[in-house]
Each structure stands twice: as structure tokens, then as C-alpha cells.
Image (cartoon, rainbow, N blue to C red):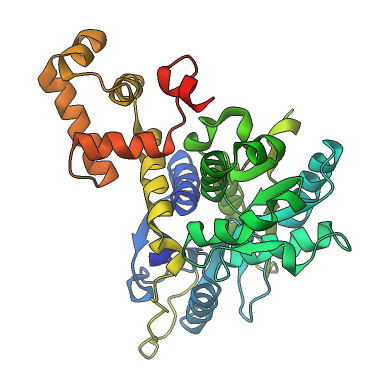
Length: 370
């Protein structure tokens, strides 16, 4: 039974959920038994390997060290570049350096000379690697002053960036939610700047796809992380002389798409892993976008039509007629959306949808936004 330990503060993020789905999907396909655990004390007796999924550098470092202490070999699964921690472990990670270089080259081919890095979480190992890769790719052209940080408030990040927006031709955002926030705020504050700037995100979320040509989104194939992670473990099991394996997965830039060991001896009680909540996840704007991403990822075609009609302000009677369902069935689906988005009712749900979903072409709202 292969255990999976996830950083608590990271567990509800779209990136963690996607990494976990990629890993468990591969386990299911290969019929490998696995279990989620909340602490290292729950590692099944005799199990040699453990998967770690995390983002915060302090938590990852402490978890790797604790695994070594109890004789369990950790395989780190992360949407970031490879980091050298003082521990014995293997990793599946992003080829951030080469992927960032390819993205910069693409933007330069589009005539973008000055490029900013936006929405960087200073506590994230992932964003730390993005920053290092960005500075390396733009060596001599961009520096620390061209990096804009999200220390728990996308609004504050925008206010730091906006006075200098005219200095740049393009913006690489640390993630899709930062890109959406930037596009929304520029659209409200200065539409001309939005039309001029090239904005790139990272993850290719369903929410980002609704923004069409406004955001160049980099696709992260999370299923490949899962396949590589299981392949890595199988390689370690087959070859006892392999002590350290690193597999790197490259991003897909949208415009370019073409036998168990003996149980370890009893150990003293382990120190608790860091549990401090990263303020990055306390940002209401980010939380709302993540909840909407969850809603869109779980929505069926019928749900998407209901969302369109809610945005138009349609009454339940009209929604019922257009969807060929009873009003009670429509209300049931709307209540489910309300629960997913953690709002109090239809009115708050509709307000949330209107806040982040761009108006559909041809609607009155779209005409008003032009």
C-alpha cells in the first residue's frame, strides 16, 4: 500500500489536486494499491516508498528529512524545478528552466522586448524556481526589479505593477489565477494597456480558457507527472543501485503545441511538520477563482448552460424550459453550485460568476464591455 502525504496548506489548490489526480490515476490504471495519509506515523508497516506532494520549501525540507529518519524513501512530486535538499530522495518535477526559456523565446518572436514576471509567491518553491529561470532566460535584460510579488494579495501585486505597466511589452504570470487577476484589473482600469500587453499564464485552467486570446496559457500535463512518478518508483525497485533519480517534465506552450524492504526499526516520535498557512492562500480573490475552477472542472454540459442563463439573469421558469428539466431539478443543480463556490445563494453565486467569467460574445454584457 503506497502512502501519499500532501502538504495541508497546498492540498486544496488546483495544482495539488491535478498532481494528485495524475498520480492516483496511474496507480488505478496499473492496479497499484495506495492510500492518503495525514502524518508519517500512518505509513503502513514495511512500506519502503512514500510520495510527497508539496510546495512550501520549509514543509518539503522537513518532510524529506523526517522520511529519511524513519527509513522510508520519499519521492517528491512537484510542479516546480528540481531543488537540492539535504536529504535522500528522488523527484518528478518541471523542467522550468528550459520551459521558461522557450516561453521567453516565443514572446520575443512576437516582438516583446521587455518582459515582467508577475504574481510570484515568495514562499513557494515552485515560484522561486520560476523566478530563477526567468532571470536566467532574460540575463542582462531583466532583473529583480522586474519581478512583482504576491505576498497574500493579488490586488497589492497589481497596484505595484500598474504604475510601471507601460515599461513592458509582455507579462509572464506565475500561474493562471495571477494572469486572470491581471487581465480583469487591467480591463477595468486601463483597457488600452490590456490590448497592448501580451499576458502569459501557467496551467491552462478551464477558467483561463474562457479568456480566449487575452491570455497565452502554458499547459502543464499533470498526467505525465503521474506516469513518470510511478515509472520512477518501479525503476528504483528493480535496480537497488539506483540511489537518486530526477525526472523533469516540460511545459507545453500553447502556440507551439504540435519488492518491499524490511520494516524499519522503531523510531522516536517524529517532530510535527510545519503547519503554518501560507498567506498566499488567504487571498479572497485567489480563493474565489480556485472555487470557480473547481465548479467548471466538475460541471457537465447542462450545468454550463445553466451558468450561461444565470449570467443572463434568467428566471428559473425560463431555465427550466431551455434545459428541459423541472424547476426543482434546476434548483437542485444551482444549490450544488452554491455549495461548491461556498456562497449563500443564487444571488451571490451569480455575482461571483459575473465577477470572473468574461461575457460571451454577442451578449449585451459583451457589447457593453467593448
